[in-house]
Amino acid sequence: MADFIQTSITKTAVRELAAPIADVAAFATIVDGVVTNNPWNCTAYTYGDIPQDPVAKSREAYTAYILFEDNEASTVGTMTARSQTVAAFNAAIAEILADAELATAMGGDAVRDADSENYSCTLKCHDANGEVYYVTFARDQVRISSYSDDAIRTRVETWADTVPALA
Image 1 (tube, one colour):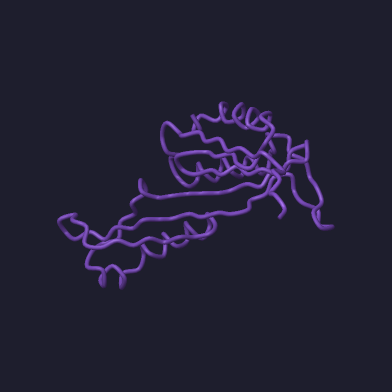
Image 2 (cartoon, rainbow, N blue to C red):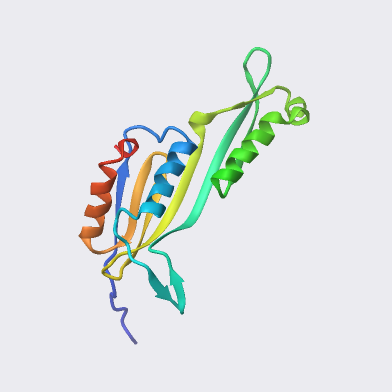
């Protein structure tokens, strides 16, 4: 019977943020800045004859929380809306807050609970050494995964140190 042979050593590193990222606009600015400016010096590559960007979004999720409050500001209902893009997230919130029939059905006025919102975006990155690794931004942490070269962690960490929201 054949044995399993270890073929790679991958690592994960997490930075817990001192405070959550303020809002979805600040979150999107950070993520879009990485995709646009490529601060980790990632390189383009080809996979299956298809050119790949050095840094690309591979997964996104944005969750809004809406409370429905009665005249005494007591919560009489809640709703969550999960979207795959920032634009859809903002549009969903606007629609829910403006929906008078929904507010009547829920028994109170719709109020956005911005402090409870969750944001997540995973970037697929190609290092100059050939490694593909992932950086996942959440509202309260940044995670680097599937890397083996510690220089990757050092580059991401050095960059994160320059972004006040990622302290």
